[in-house]
Length: 82
Image (cartoon, rainbow, N blue to C red; front, side, top):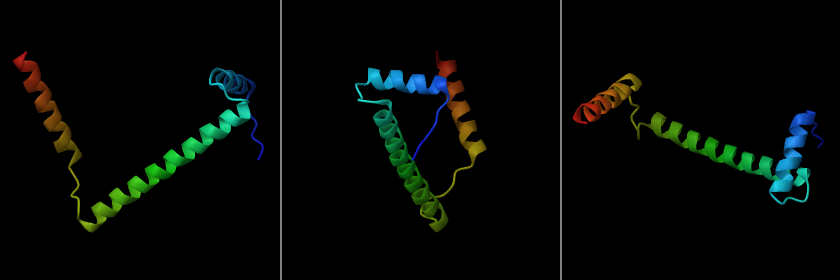
């Protein structure tokens, strides 16, 4: 697969590859993409698992407004104690 970058991006990749001790920008990009794909797969797995937990009822959703209001109250309490 061939990927073409804008000249400024290619220069940054070459510079970063040299700084990181990679033999080439190609090796650097392969490492980056490989890590990104691994992280993306882990994130997808986590989201699927959490969705399954919600859907099955094992975990109950939290009302967002209630949650943030509680945070604001705690912050105000902490600030008033100072």
